Amino acid sequence: MLLADTLASVRQRIRTGCEKAGRSPDDVTLIAVTKTADPAAIKEAVRLGVTDIGENRVQDALEKHAAIGDAARWHMIGHLQTNKARDAVRLFSLIHSVDSIRLAREIDKEAKKIGKVQEILLEVNVSQEATKFGINPDDVTTVYKEIAPYANIQVKGLMTIAPEVADPEMARPYFRRLKELKDALYELRELSMGMTNDFEVAIAEGATMVRVGRALFKG
Ligand SMILES: *Cc1c(COP(=O)(O)O)cnc(C)c1O
Image (cartoon, rainbow, N blue to C red; front, side, top):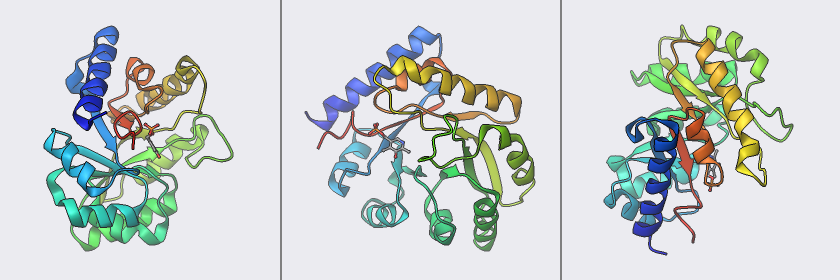
């Protein structure tokens, strides 16, 4: 299928999901996850109106950014190693995957060097799977309170990756829990949750950003 068609279909799914949830589609940002897409496909996505690109490796993002530039906002959605913080703050509008105070401190330090206030999300391992990165739900408030005063970081919200389940309905409790955690930290606005298989459920539970790869770029 052409990207124009897959994109139209994803946008329709977002609109339908928003209608069902009584929400405005303007309140949900589509982040096109391009980890399997080459620069030509990303350029095409941007030409078709995609404004937000998600990558999960700094090195790949650097290479693609060299080809595409700042025609879209770049989102870091994968695990970020401390030693990549320098490159990350130069490239990304939003880092979704901040999962430790140590990493936040490094981001703050690197952002300060270039006079930037780096917007971030805290990644929460809601499902507490051993294979996943993210802050334990019980520690989110403590970590947030530590990071919130950093001068060169602004915490915008929370992010999670739901478990891979056969029925997207089974992801709902994890999305709901992330929303509860966000609501408890009342300054936060953004909820990055929902992927190809489960983004309608995430929208129903309050997602403000959905990260969609496979439904767009089928290879
Ligand atoms: C790959 C990836 C996505 C997109 O997943 P799809 O199932 O391809 O939509 C979203 N979030 C993260 C963190 C990812 O690594």
